Image 1 (cartoon, rainbow, N blue to C red):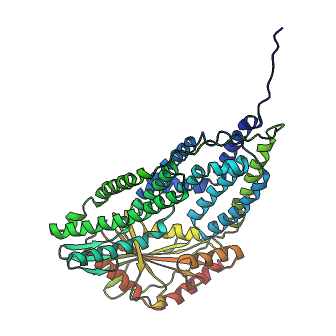
Image 2 (cartoon, rainbow, N blue to C red):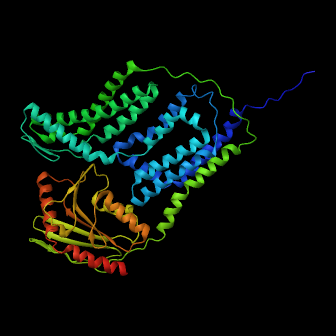
Image 3 (tube, rainbow, N blue to C red):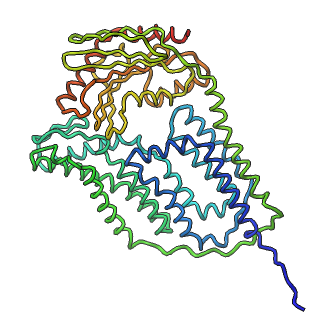
Length: 507
């Protein structure tokens, strides 16, 4: 008589469905918790050509995981609560980045939270086997823009040395190279960031796909960093040399970004060709490790719940602090002096925390905007307002420098120049009536005031040169001089700002 036999699935097979479900639900919960970070990242992917490759990162990570399917076949998932507390330092880092207004830090922490979720549900051994594709997800974060000034300086120096070796007379000042054929400016687009970021992402993918030796991976990834930087220097030097041959800087620089991508593609193909002889065969699949039987899917449920619950602590704390933000009103507008040759336009009363003043001068026109920021607001609100006033939508290149020839009593001014469309703006910030420090130090000051509820009103002042959306070098020089003259004429500005912000704090 035939008999039916029911076999109980092995522990690894029994846990596949619960672990997969827990990973899916946990990922969705984390995506909702860090939705602002995700939206900001996608916005950068769409707006910047330097990060367009980020749309390919997830498919590339999935392919890397698929490529490792045989090597992980015998490794069982080991869900455990032991790794869930690792989310606490990750959330601490997220909270610090949120208070400092560093979106890239928040996004990196969000990916870190996802890594902790995978570690808690897969276990150490399986996570280690899949660490390549899992850690590759960090390339979803559009980071690296902070190295643009250093890349600009390197490119300008490379051009200067190259012109000297080739015997082409040139006058180099900071990021500007002048030759007999015209003037070249090493803008952000010429720094090679877009090439470097894409090259590093591809280099890591190629190394993970083709090498098993850590040394070979490190060497190829290092080459993916060094070669694009040097190649971009060669590309920029070639444009200047071409301008010298053609006798026209404009003709040589036309469509240089498009040509740059073609040059970059050739460089990467050569790099891949150089790395192909050193490829290694995939690792052999390890022997299967018997797993302990699990009565239910609870082994996968509780680690996911713990990670998501602890991850919610960071956004919850930030939301609680943001409830204490108090809008500021500009009741008194600091008096502004019209420099020689300029006439102030009719004054309009401030609207909420914003006051706008116009000046017409012999060399052009200026628009001055004064904005008081809310009390106890984190630095990101100030950064958003500053970007809105100083960088036009769709600007191709932006450079920031210190505004020269200005007395410190008028504040600490920076000069922001954008191209395509062109805009030239000087900006300064005061906190509690005192000139604010720039960079990380200024962010720390505002974050401290937000945490400790210090009543000090931040004020942002911008001076924009009104002009055409495309400026010639002569028009740009005149606009720069006009902005500098206006700021230099504001003697006693800090005292006037201090009085205005005291009134704003009282309101």
